[in-house]
Amino acid sequence: MGWRSVVVDTPSKISFKNNYLVVTGSDNNMIHISEIDMLMISTTQATITAYALSELNKAKVRTVFCDEKRNPYGEISAYYGSHNTSKKINLQLKWDEDCKMRIFTQIIRQKIANQAALLTKIGKQNESVMLSSYLDEIQISDITNREGFAAKVYFNALFGKEFSRQIFSDTNAALDYGYTILLSAINRAVINCGCLTQLGLKHCNEYNFFNLSCDIIEPFRVIVDEYVYENIGRVLDRDYKFELVNLLNNQVRFNNENISLVMAIKQITKDIINHLNCHVYEGIKLYEL
Image 1 (cartoon, rainbow, N blue to C red):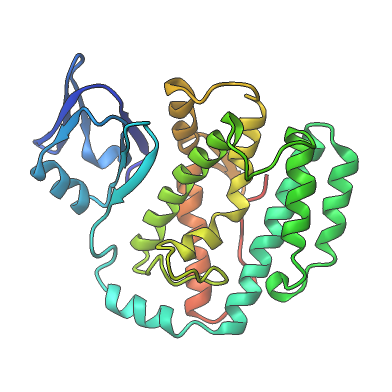
Image 2 (image 1 turned 180 degrees about the vertical axis):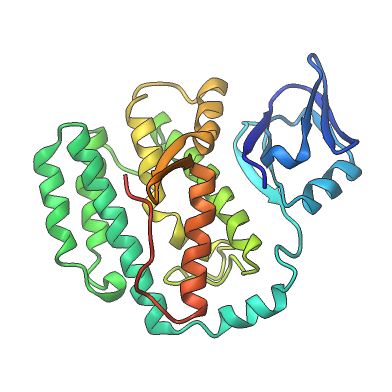
């Protein structure tokens, strides 16, 4: 199981030889494929062989491609993430609706709790208290939209009262880029569990390929939010993008041990899916800031 996030951002040829991914360009690099969790090709001036793509898929490495602006726009993954994918999908189709909504509610509760914790960490105590008060008001499936109320208070506290997620800015571009990286890691974790990313808990947009991943991502967003807050005013350049990708390799505290963020994502995704398969919503461990 890989742990490295590899970014190729210069004109290169990517090939495969003797279980190594070989990147040939201005610098030559070889990385054992077993170490790679995600490969991001962040330039349109790179070529990759069919053999390399095939072996990356066999190793369940997520391969992400970027457009001419170096923004992620698509990814390749294997058809099957588990040896018994058909069985896992049948289980997914039978997930209990009440269990799904209760687990989704826990996810949103933890998202807001993490947002409040970040606001406390940066000295926004009043706003943190306001978010914490929403936790007592959350109902099943968040039918009163406490998540939306919390988001307005949260983002205004982080980035100013004039900030909106709807406007174009370097801050929003960085947030979107970081969220995309997280989503890619969660997509891989979902597929490795043998499930379909399209079938979500609360998210059910027919045009969204990643409804389930968009449910699971919520408590993790705060990791990107904190990093972007620490870099307010910074242009989303090559170095900044690389740092956002590298967040997956950062150590986080989960289940009383220090592990990489990407490993935490895998463990939490597997735990959520196992609970759903068993129609049990109690005892799920989610990421806490």
